[in-house]
Length: 241
Image 1: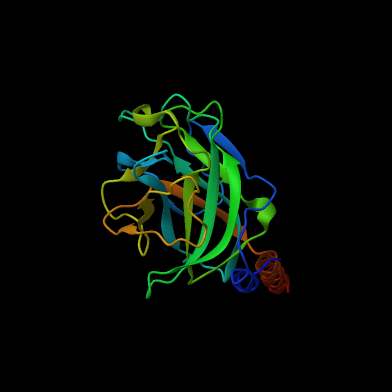
Image 2 (image 1 turned 90 degrees about the horizontal axis):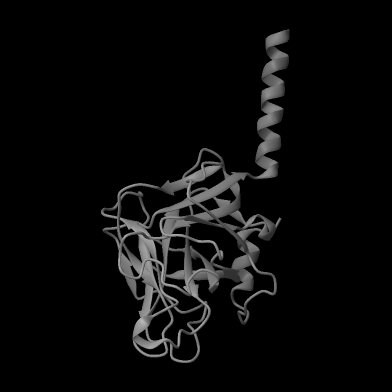
C-alpha cells in the first residue's frame, strides 16, 4: 500500500506525469457506490476548463476533508459533473479531449497544497452536457487518512488553437453555496502560454462560498476491514457462548 507519508516524500522529487492514463467513464446517472464525501445538488453555472492559445486559462477542482468513521480508506474514484445549459458547457471538440488530473494533500491552516500525483486522462468521447465523469483511481492504491484534507484539480492537456470559438472548452458544474464542510472550490486562473501549468503550481482562486459537484468514492483500508471482520467474529462468538 502506498501511504501518503511515502507520497509526501516523493513530492519533494521532480514531478512528471506518470505513463499510465486514468480510465474515465461518463454516465447520465449519478454513481452511488462507495461514497465517502459528496456534493451532488444545487447546480448553478459552472466554471470553464480551458487552455487557450491566448488569454486566461483555467484548471478547476475541489478540496475535501476525510471525516469517516474509520482511520483510513483506499481511494477508488472521483466523479465530477459536466455543466449544462450554459455557454461553453460542452463545446464541439471537448469530448475526447486529453486531460490532466492532479491530486494533493491540503493544509487547512496555510491553504497550501502538497502535490501527490499527476495523471493523464481523457474526457470520454461520448460525453454530453450534464454527464457525470468518473476518474478510476483504484489502480493507484492511494490511502486517505481520516482527519486529513485533500484536493483534486482537472485541466485540459491540449492547447486550444481555435481562438475565440474555444472549441475545446467545457464546464464543471458547481453549487450555489458552501455545501461541503471544510471544503471548497479551487482553480488555477492565469495564462499558461505554450506550456501548461505544472503540478506544483498553487491555485490562485479559492472560492469558499461554493463547492464543485463531486463525489469521492473510497473503501475501508484492508487492515481496517480485517479489524472490523475480526471484531464482528468476536462479537458473534461471544453471543454464541
